[in-house]
Image 1 (cartoon, rainbow, N blue to C red):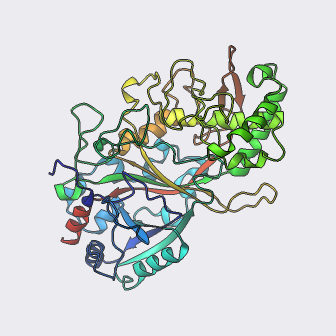
Image 2: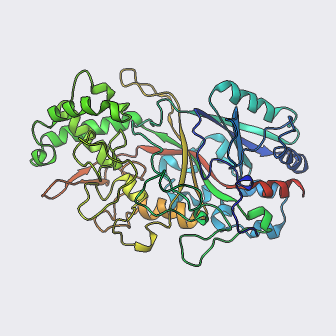
Image 3: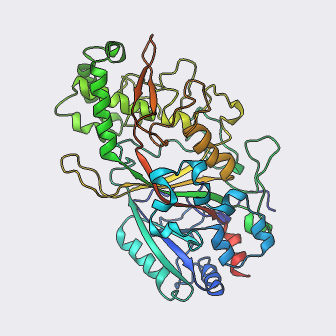
Length: 487
């Protein structure tokens, strides 16, 4: 096994994001193992025009027209006819597949596998997921046509799903996204990416390297060329109830206006201060969501709505962290979006989404877990932008990829322990993540911190995000694809 990192052997979009405008995922079932293996081999040859070329982690000399990558389900490895010894060397979570782990990761009720899109309901038939990144639909179409041409007898495309960046890095709930990612030792320059968190070892996401656990490496599937430089991906289609989310903010704001602690939470006159601050802050930060208030200014109810939205997430909708600016999205001096922590008395709620997913250096019960569960997140919205003036029933959400060296110790631990049990802190134990959690209006609650007073407990949070499909994938290194092709 090589001990030095070689970017030409790792698929792209793992350690560094592509930052392209569009993505298309192709869900594929294998019909002929030998022909599919041969076709996979052609994706490694840039001179072979009969298949798209796999994009590696190697630096670009010029920006390519498209980026092409692939992941393989466990059933896909079996369909490619890997040996039983190789198949048995993969971890249980991956072998069982996402649908079998549904209860563990909160895919219950309306998110249960029986409600998923058709291509994901039969995990035995979903073998490969190709992803194409480009800046326009024409290149997506051209690559898909290349995939489908001449491969009908090898494999079949079951379904396609497109995503696109409709407003920079904003997602459907209005939050600025793609702000904080793990920075890896030997890959990212700390001076270029200021962050209070320690850099992550490569083994946090790539197999064959040291992990954040002292003296521990995740097991590399056999043979070594197959497993080394691979990673695991929890691919998920997450439907977002934007109308329900904005409606809940209305309900919470109306409740807070009549709450006896409203003056402590948002002092009278704060709406005027926000309006003045916004005009001064506009030119110094991305602020797409708040542009709607530029002409009218903020009302007191607007302030309460945005305060609740920020508390649920842990960031204001323009990305400013509540830990650094707990009472306004427009701090007088612009703050770092990444270089912060959660000290004692932090203005960020204990139960907020970003704090639960990544507690940074904050004090938690599972102290050793602070930096061992880091996930690389790659995602893009799908569906049309929601227009509250013209509500519709179209599906919209996020196409999410959650990458890690170990699905059980990282992805599933975050989903179960932190998002849906609240085991980080006794003050949130028993509550679910306010944005992604398995919430029930009869039982859910969220504590909104109030300066120098007891928190205000919000109740009745519905479930805002439902799973519409997904699978656990292995993203092999390029030598692994070559190994599979040579079988």
